[in-house]
Image (cartoon, rainbow, N blue to C red; front, side, top):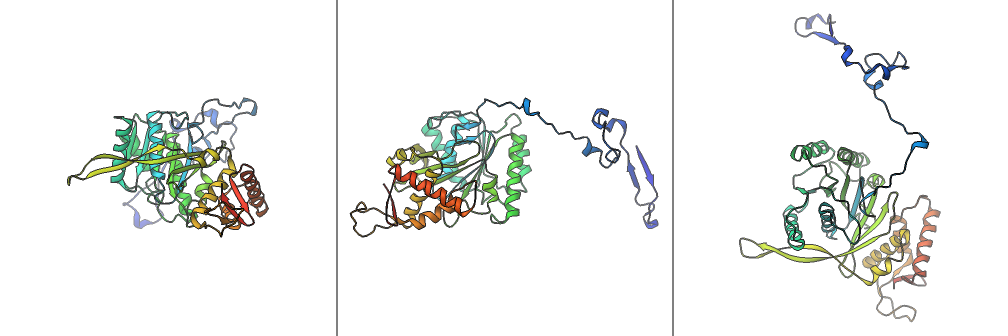
Length: 392
């Protein structure tokens, strides 16, 4: 019901009316929800907040679920935020497309179990090339259709976060995506990657998409100038449930390393290569080509399987450091001929920046580096002479 009140300013008389709308009995929450609440909460201004009830589970009734926590075993969790980062042209978009297409198809991926679900992919860079990439996948794997939905429309977060949710629901009312890919962060963020407020809003918009579909959101991102970590403010990586680093090795293989997995194993590595595929002919009669991801093998990859966790990350950082600044030293009987080496101090500094520990102190970082270095030397994966380090 409503009640009219006289206006305090006579100049508004006859033009507008000030009306108080009072809730009816039909609008009131059940009496059971209100029992025991103080009168100060039961006034009309606080009623809606007071009617919200939070659910709690007693310790003795908390039960462990035995269902799989992964869409892709050990790599992609059922729900959460996954950051995939690497240098430009390192193959990260090719790798992620191949991986999520396998999830959409429900195919085993690199001897890992997959939980099939629909995939929505926002290709915000190189849209025309992405279409050729889809055609190459279709041709090589001989598949006509999978529940994979591509959008080349520009989106900007956080402004378009709600539009992403409503558009998916409107166009595919019977589809609930298990994976939403944002490729890349740089092309989908409003503001600066380095600004904590802008990055925080971006993460919250990604969380909105995750919550709406109870899915995993994969964000493809570039590396910083030093190449040792994802670019921009750390609020992104701090919010991630998993983090995957992608790079090229000396043989041009694409190496994907699980750097971090919340409540799961880390240090796993997947080695791939790009294979060129002809997908058609353009109007000028020239071949249209793209690439597909294929499994690859390399001696170092087999050796790397013997190490996990911080040691595997330290080994990857050493590989990158040698690729960047490695030099062949003067002939020395202690160092294999024509072997590129780096001073240990540069490897150590990059490890301090790229390895995470529960304790962020300098002493904790030093101990983590020493443990990783010793583990790699014990496994005969690296060599050391004086201050020089190299890959065995």
